[in-house]
Length: 420
Image 1 (cartoon, rainbow, N blue to C red):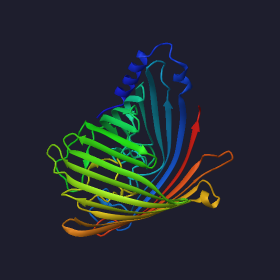
Image 2: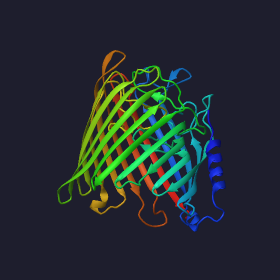
Image 3: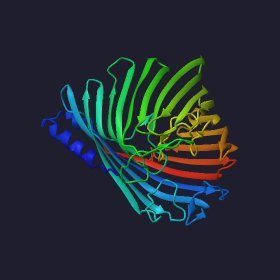
Image 4: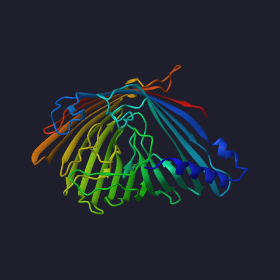
């Protein structure tokens, strides 16, 4: 198990190398904010007699329910003067239990101890040293990546983080180049770093790993068109290639067709049996405040698409609020509708609803099917003393022919204090 010590030492070392007469940009370009998040989640297990039903003291659980308050303090400096500039970022996280118990824990929001008790509070501090040369930035320490091959989870109380190094370059016109290595991950309800593990439905042979290597490029030749390619490897678990094409096509005044095509090819590494091809396409018609999308995702191979386990979100089209629809050989489709009420004179109010259905896979040697329906309603206060406060209700229904059915509600209230 790792700690945040290396990130703090790395930041202190880099700060020690900075000129004592750092430019005003180091401070003038700095930012400090505190994000607060009040999070409530209730997951109701509708048929608590399946092999995948969570259990407490050997008995199937009827529900998981937790209520908590989260704080995320973020500091980002500017860079020192000169062709090679240095800086440092900091991330402080604190989660406080408001209501939960051993019998109802397990939503992923709060830290659960070995004896099953929920911690009254848990926290984390991570530092990131950074250096800039031209339009390239190297960062070493704590990262919260939003990469297609490693997308941190931030759907509970506190965000997931990774420990490692990354370089992002925009020196080439219309290109963004990214490469890096992560050595450990801190899960969304943990205070400590640990080795990374693999999830891939149907695969065997996975082991804990302290190396996740990746490199990729995005080319945006024109407005509305972007092509991306990444290659990644979780050492001793899997190798993965990812390609993506995004395109926006104006059809008429106010009417646009957005195309999003994603392809993953994943193979074994070490002693695993990973073998997966995942091709998905989503087409969305957007008109004024409306957006109507249709997606289809096809999987081939002996296993499901692999990804870093423990809450990391796979960047596949049909990974939604509760389920990822990435069982071995599973094919799935999605119908989604979004509406921005600003088009009706109610700025700040938005709605998203979607339905995903998966089939052509097996559970326990039996043909299986599953579906999920999501509803999101969000509002951002537009004026007054509470301006900027955001409120969100997430409602989920999941049903599977050989899995535990769930009904779920999440209520989230957030506000960010910007100090400078």
